[in-house]
Image (cartoon, rainbow, N blue to C red; front, side, top):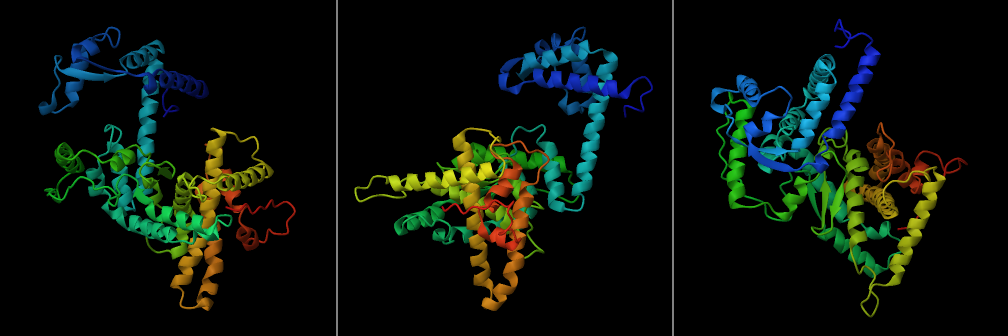
Length: 456
């Protein structure tokens, strides 16, 4: 686009200027320091831009709005970050007409190019097309309501079913197989914690422990000729009616704050593992056309790490005869953490420091134990499905190799910034603590392979 403009001069210099302007605008538009102000629309627009009257703004906006949605100067407006908006306009004006126009043109060009690229990526997958449309709506809607998502992403239910099945298998796994130092009564308590922990998937999970609002009376008049925005508004209107009758549950409020593209989390107050919606999509999860073991390496391991956090959070796991918490549990956990830290340093990550030491410890502990637990659960799952030991033995080598490869696939990323662990740390630390990984890829006798076996 820049090269097509006859008067841009040196393209490199123009790009540098635009990047600088963009950085200044981003710094000025700081939502953390924004406040909400209520005032007449005319008052807000009057001094927003030098030599631009409120009537000019309103006339320009009404030119593109339908007659039924025309705005008036006396209407009340709720404005967030008024000073930030004004400062952004000042920066654009100060940059000059030519640079401002070029900045707007390149921004629009990049936006269109991004949308076209996304369309190409999702055009062959119905449920991804639906999410693409929802993503566009989220740019102007501060919160996507549960009923809207439930209506438009029903095709992702197959993936959710697969995830819930894996979670049930992990809940019934033998905790003692990955927690060698715990006493028998503590292993029993850990198994109880597994059963007490529930799973909530993204923002469209319908199986939360608490009863959600009832949308069963929704009878949408969706027809073949109805456009997306009509369906959106009809669903939104019904949702608002339901919410007036039934406020959100605690689980729904927590889910609403979950980043759909974030990491797996655990909420102690709800005893719930939260799985963001992105992990229902390929290549993280395949709901059909792949063997059972294909999904354990990524989603299974992440769910297991959530259960590991639940056990870490559980108090009184090692009660003594007097009923107080036994020091042995903390001592043994500290031994495990010290072992993981040594492995972390040997792998060359000593300088990778992000977050607090406690956050790094929790991340290392949960990921390493989650990988062990998912690996053990996969083996148990395959043994239960196999007709005999011979069939299991024929499947297990490929299943185990796929598990390790998929586990590291999740860690692939263009950035290596730790938060609190970098993608490379998330991949290597748990696997170097698993003897099965070393034997699968013939690394046991390599001098440059750092192996450990930190017990949990």
